[in-house]
Amino acid sequence: MKKLFFIGLFFVYFALNSPTDTSAMHIMEGFLPLGWTLFWWCLFIPFFVWGLIQIKKVTNENPHLKLMLGMAGAFVFVLSALKIPSVTGSSSHPTGVGLGSVLFGPQVMAVLGTLVLFFQALLLAHGGITTLGANAFSMAVVGPFVGYYSYKLLLKLGNKQSMAIFSAAFLSNLTTYLFTSFQLALAFPTGGVGVAFIKFISIFAVTQLPLAIVEGLLTVLVWNWLVAYNSKDILFLQKLKSGVVNSEK
Image (tube, rainbow, N blue to C red; front, top):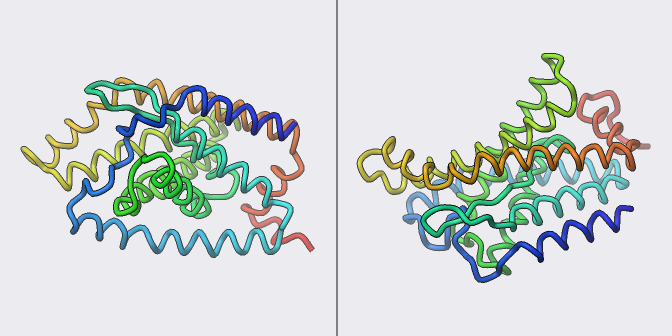
């Protein structure tokens, strides 16, 4: 069943993705001024190191979770590589980081999301290497942290699990694009940062809002599938994050 799931994901990816379209929301190679490029790298690196430490700890103590970790990374790769045409010849895409944030926590997604962005830059010409710090900070740091804590908040307020999962995916998607627009507005503040931000976000708003809703619904479906076919690992991860268990002896 797991093999069928991965085959289905990659079928959707190759059916919908066009390798010649390089105008996705990832900031392209060389687009940011050097100062801002270095700034975002400096902010991003500590989160990446934090994520590496968390992954090493989780996988060393619980090696059976490596498959689930790979699934979370594959989900991000496939969804974030799908490009839906937007206005002005640009495009929007899902992020896929909400699911992994709920499963492993946002620190781990700082690594998984960055690896996905790195390979997309090399293989698909999405984004770039110099702008990897900026792209990773928005999609692999800001998005996952917002999604994860919205998930925790909704559960604390007594909402259903499915609503909390939807919120994590929906807000991870939207905040990634909001923050990317903010990054672009800071780098190119024509008319002021506020005006530039509105200009950048309006380009993607038409497609991004419904796309975030679709991603939220899809993530709920995938979560339900995982609960149905791998409930043991799901329960273990939830206990691990809550501190009920520390490791598998």
